[in-house]
Length: 350
Image (cartoon, rainbow, N blue to C red; front, side):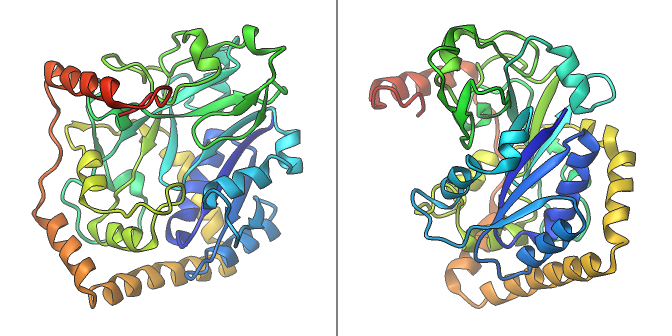
């Protein structure tokens, strides 16, 4: 079985080796990675990893019609690795697949859901929880507190990425779900959630959110670390977003994602396997040197941003702002009612 992860990166070389080591330990066999306009040496790291036979690197420096990530996915649609894959998942560098069944590997998840054509991996949002300084060590060991398993608001907490069978039923990749279904195959497609429940027919065509008010994580979850340390968040804010390039990252993004309600160490079940993969990567002298350079760039970038008042102000607000707190179900239902009355038809979101 060939399982492909598709990734888009800019200036995130400091996090690349952990992400790659973890997903190799999970059982992904192929990696198609797009880089754009890198200043920290991410692109050079990817070139070295390609020389080592560990991934395929494509530069995606622009122009970016529809945004950086959409431009990359359009190129991926035509790539030989996509054509050869049995299963595909589009991921970001701050997303880590966390499987709870069997030996925590991809084959165990697929064995648990043998009839699935698509499996939704619902985000579990891991907050900052007061961590200020960027450290060069695995984020999956630093950030261990997350949103509760059952959360009624915000709606983004129920978003998912989709692991899907690449048999021609869907003919294009998407950020959260595959696109362009084959009408002749649509009626037979079966979607399952991360707890192994079959989802309704509408998911064959649309839907970006798992059902609220229930545990969507019994078999698999997607650990999402959107914030990181406060210093890293300032650097991320200066870089901007991959999908919504015109939207600035600020306190709104932070406050909806800074969840610290529950401890969750489940991803560490793969720590030994991950550490073995990571050690092998660092054993390559060229790769280790490039990683160290990316770490150094990140620290210097934060210091340079502190010379600018907007980023100093953002950093100060991060330091002053407490974590998010869950809303009572009745309050969340009121917010949804407002969203449903005021959202354009077919948007499916607040």
